[in-house]
Length: 302
Length: 226
Image (cartoon, rainbow over all chains, first blue to last red; front, top):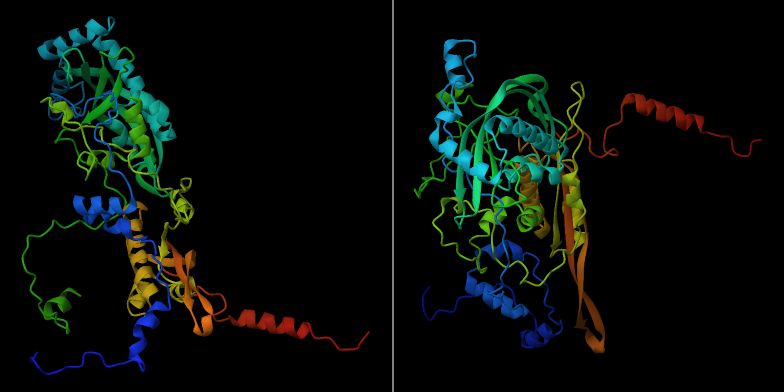
């Protein structure tokens, strides 16, 4: 831009430019509400949010508001059970299989200490009876999940497990059947821990199930997306049950499932999906010209 | 227990976890080194401080997305998936938006997006954004496998908020200025678009033409006869 030379940017001009201000005052400006505010709210800094709240006359939230909180479930499995590799593959009639089933809970000292701790709260707790109870809770929980009976499900399942079980199935219909137990359920692991106070004890007991089940999951439109209603599957599962011992109204509920690395992968889903590429490092993408004519390679592929 | 229950009933799990680091809420800090609270399941921030703004505008359209159909029998024809999406209170006139909405009816999603990119209307920008959002929703939440395998089954715009302002005319006369908003609704259905979406523009088969001609012939009457 050369200084001193007047350059015309506009190519149009009103026939009476002297009255521009009056013409502008003809229409009273109306402040329209901004309906697209929510799209940009996440990009605002706290200072900007503060200024917007002042404009609207909204007071900031009070910082000393106290609310009581109840911790009725822990956030994870502590000292998880490590299932022995190849468990459930050998029949119990073979030597190897018999050795696997000979894994006694009484030989594990830490687990026995935990069982003793549980007995101090629950007098008639015994691993053998508990295993059967655990299976009943398992069946009850899954039946409640299928029927979407969330009240019963909360009684059978902890707060950690509940979203993991229900989130993906919210828009789906599930059909589940417990056919039979191939091996009697067995308690394989037990641990106790305290949260915040030494007296606030939670106990986690891992139970091994070897059962036959059928599972069919249908999507929102009634199309089958996983499993089959007819084909039964043999399932070896290590389910962690948790109880808040210090709470007199505590219940044994399903907390988590231990899925070892050597477990065979599940049946793949019935649809394909685009794999999300990992976010690339900040490398400038070179704009290479795409050849308009097909190359020899692409012609060979086609 | 109740608080935890309530949180899960009103919010999603992820939003609860994310609530631990919000912009301006005040989470109490747990100083214990207990590893079990690392993956916490609750938040302590204030949810009651902000004034309650009731939802405004249309709310029934997305409810169609919550309908769960009964499982299909093995021999039944596969039910096509659909997704309903909308954008409310777009600063655009519904009378102008009608042109854009009706243009894309019956088109495949890709074709509709292509056409909208080159339509010389401000409303087309909004409609294109809504279509892209709906496509994304369909793939992520409504079990649609291929994002291109969608077509525009329903597309319409309705009147939104109308604010009135005034302007002056010559000789002290007053005029009303309407500031229109519109709501735009779209339903994408899985599958390829039908060959003829509009019944009127579909070419008639020789059979229909013949039957129509025969009906016309039979309707003839002699005027003034008994």
